[in-house]
Image: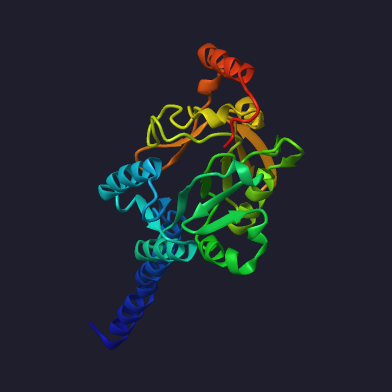
Length: 298
């Protein structure tokens, strides 16, 4: 082979290399595409937040919720987390720790709490901290929740598991001298502002602990049996039993929805039908409305 032929073969070999290099250049692009896909598919963690019980105070409902939530989360640590908190700061820190540990966003977060009808406005508690449309105007009170807002996304669903948290009606004062608006919608809007593009859920009336959450039936629909709840000031609560509201922070819209509960992984379930719509429930509610009296609230 003469020198000219060698030069020609060398040039052909050199010119063929870009074809191979082009294939190599695609590898980083595929890597970037994979990373983008992983970010888009970033998993969500579900949370169930229970207030720590005060010493010396008997609260069977809260203790039952703590027990069953802890049992559920024990076997589903990468999907569902139950947290017991003394205050909002502690709850926020515990939630953030889990989210950062698993590089996750907030899926469903249920704030399990008692309502206080006597105060005359919708609220919920995280430990000793009260959240209402009034307190959420205070930046210091708001701060722990704002930190969580950074982990919210379009799939985030916030449930206020407190009685009357979504109440929009006027209720008579305990002494029957005047009425006051509960402003549950204002509370839901305030939370929507914190959690960005999320959906907020709250009930107009009672949120019951039996037969319990984590079931696919209308587990939280019902009414309490104590005598004080037969007081006439509770008439709006009876009339709105089982009614839930949804606030979409992305569209700034309110919608009535079916009863809200959780599945075994802490995902929110919105049922199509409510127990209160059955003939049996309608008769019981009508019967209780007829028997309301003054002076039973003590």
